[in-house]
View 1 (cartoon, rainbow over the protein chains, first blue to last red):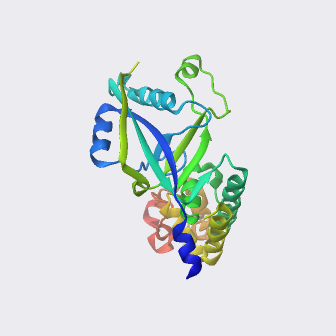
View 2 (tube, helix red, strand yellow; view 1 turned 90 degrees about the horizontal axis):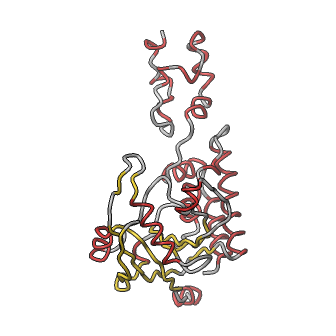
View 3 (tube, helix red, strand yellow; view 1 turned 60 degrees about the vertical axis):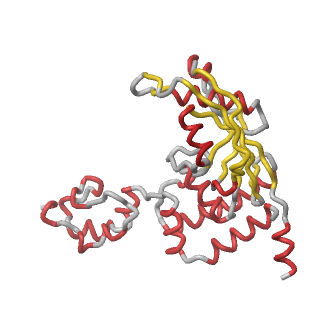
Length: 196
Length: 84
C-alpha cells in the first residue's frame, strides 16, 4: 500500500513539443486534439509526433517538416499551400529518452529479449530488427511507455535536392503514445506560413 | 517510475507469457511473418502431398494472403484441385 502511494505521487515530466502541419489540420487539432498516427513508416511506432529541444531548433524542424509533407511526390503537386505551427505541453511519468545511456540500455535489453522470443515463435523467421515500427510498439507496450524521445536523422530539403543522405541524427523527436498525455489546454498556434 | 524498473517489469511480463500469447502480441502490433517463413513451417505437409508442384512459393493453392493467419496452412484448407 505504501509503495503504491509513492508511485502515484510521482510527478509527471512536462515536455514542450512543436508540430508542423497544414493549416486545415492545425484548425482541426486546436478544436479536437491530436490523434495518434498509425502509419507503417512511423519513426518510433504509433503515436503523436513532435520536435523538441535537442540537437536543432524544433520550430525550424517543424516548419521544414510541414513544408516537406506538403509536396505530393507522386502527382508532383502541393497538397496544401499554407502551414501552421503548433506548440503543446505533453506529460508523462513513463518516459524513454534515448539521449540517456541507461534508457538506451533498457530499450535494448527489452528489444533483445523480444528478438529472442521471436526466434522461438517463428523458427526461421525473417529479421524482426527490420521492423522498426513494430519493435518500438512492442517495447513501448511492454514498458508501458507514455513518451519516447529520440534523436533522428531526417533528410533536409537541401540534402534532398543535392541527393545527400547522411546517418548522423540532426533532430530530436518526441513520440507521445496517447493523446491523454497531451495537455489539450496548452495547444497553441504559434505561427502560420506559406509552403516554399 | 525509473527506466530500469520499467525494463525489469517488461522483461518479467514477456517471460511470463506463453509463446502463443507472445505471438498474438507481435501480430497485434503489426508483425506479419513472411510468406516463405510461414510456408516453411508446413513444408513437409505441402511437399508430401504435391511432390510435382513442390516449389513452395509458386504454389497457387498455398492460399497465403495474410501469413499471420495460421489456419490458412491447415491441410484441410489446401486446394488440391488448383495444384493438379
